[in-house]
Amino acid sequence: MIPTAPADPSTHPLDNAVWAALAGPHAPLAQRVGSAARYPADVYAYAALADPADPAAWADLHTLAGPGTTVRIKGVESVPPGWEVVGGGRGVQLIDTALRAEPAPEAVRLGPDDVPDMLDLVARTRPGPFLRRTVELGTYLGIRHRGRLVAMAGERLRPPGWTEISAVCTDPEHRGRGLATRLVRAVAAGIRERGDTPLLHASATNIQAIRLYEAIGFTLRRRTRILQVRTPGTDRAAETL
Image 1: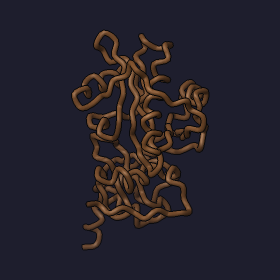
Image 2: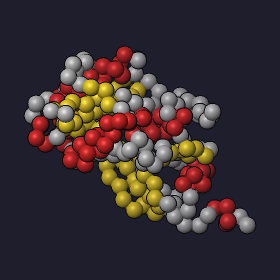
Image 3: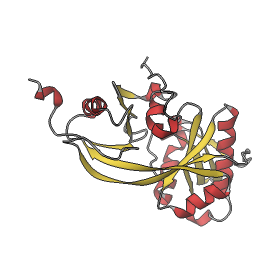
Image 4: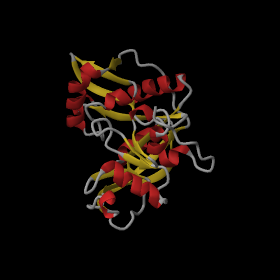
């Protein structure tokens, strides 16, 4: 069993949500070296540090990822010498404060057999990262029209006490019918049933989605930075020889 890090009472789990999930409920999925961890590349292409201000955590991430490797990381404003920022963006984090959660009778549970349809819908709508094994992170619900998957939403990060609603998307030909809202409410109902609170992440530039989420009961908690970084090209183990 992968050891989990003790909770730091001075920080909120959502301030470093990817780490909190990998060190907590998603520990069985974590690939970890010391104070660095990441999801398998075909599950969710993000890594995390227990403390982004700790140089040892960055050294652990270098060991975990390997030299000259590109990784994505959230909540980090700067990188140590030798690391290169090769991309990134800004995001927002919203939490459920007044959402009306309720089942959606027309929704169906999606699983591994539905992944081809899910990937096809993601390719048409581009809601954000969704990979071949992302479905393993939690419950995914979908709505089909004449057999074709036209809307879905599901669970991704699970920091202790919280669950992220993600992959919210609707086929362009079926928008304006409230399908995404119904699925968000339905996924949230399941999250609340197990005692967690729903949260969401969105691109800071996706103003339309942010307004929708706020209108149905989510509140902006914080703004985040997302970095795509390249690890130093020299193997740290070789440096000590």
